[in-house]
Image 1 (cartoon, helix red, strand yellow):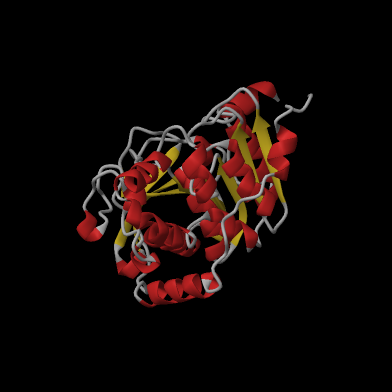
Image 2 (spheres, rainbow, N blue to C red):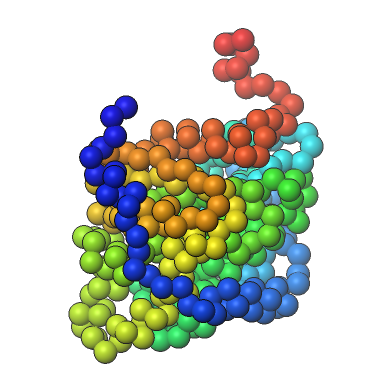
Amino acid sequence: MTADPREAALHAYRSTQDLPDDFAAFWRDTLAEARAASAEAPVAHPVTTPLDAIDVLDVTFPGFAGDPVRAWLRLPRHRSGPLPAVVHFTGYGAGRGHAIDDLTWSAAGYAHLVMDTRGQGDGSTPDGPWGDSTGYVTRGLADPAGYYYRRVFTDAALAVDAVRRLPGVDPDRVAVLGNSQGAGIALAAGYLADGVRAVLAQAPFLADLPGALTLAAQGPYRELADLFARDRPRRERALATLRYVDVVNFARLAHVPAWFSCGLDDDITPPQTVFAAHNEYAAPHDIAVWPANGHDAGGSLDRQGALDVLGRMLGADAGHLTHPSPLIEEES
């Protein structure tokens, strides 16, 4: 396939974001404080659904400041032995969704934990006094310690802690993934959490925030740009806060292999911002580029690529399924 002529410039692109001197210490102290307040084990209750091949459990685990965070755990019903796990973070505003949503990962043989992003979705995991209104990216910008994504990224690391403690999960085979906001959270969790084997990030949000504010034509970055247009004095302090959640800085310290994907016509998470994280990524990594696509990147083909990556990173016998599917039986 002939490379798109835009790719050479994208591979050369570098973010102007700077790495705070206390970045690693900030997050180390944040996690230590959160884990001290989050000693309780996750709790999982089976949920009745019409699904014949997937078991669903309603999980609650302690997140930032010990706050209860909800999640769904989906498991292939016909399984034997511990399963490799996929911890899934969702797009902006989505939350964990319904119990029977998004069955790809469990159908492929993985334990699939999808975290409810605090304050988003149906409100199952509220964000304390902030309530559940939109505009998450602008919450608490005055101070890194009070910023919204400090809480979310901490929840994400503790979601990995939680899934590694759940019965039936192989704690040594865990990957994190997501799209858009979820991809940004996954990149942070890949650095923050213990025991992560792979990061899969489709069109990650919260990358190269200085560039994103000028490049994004729509989506959550515009919330920040609109705020700064209304309240110009807040901009400098807010940008100082955002350095602590910009996933370019997590990429600079990365130690877990990653797979990125990017649509070159994306005007929500512009390709320059995705490549900013990719180009700085300190561990082994690769990127799938989709020249004609926008924020959907490769869509279903991305998902197929992600399954290929998971098979390589977590083991081809991922699910330990006790019975082949009817489709496999018919083709054999």
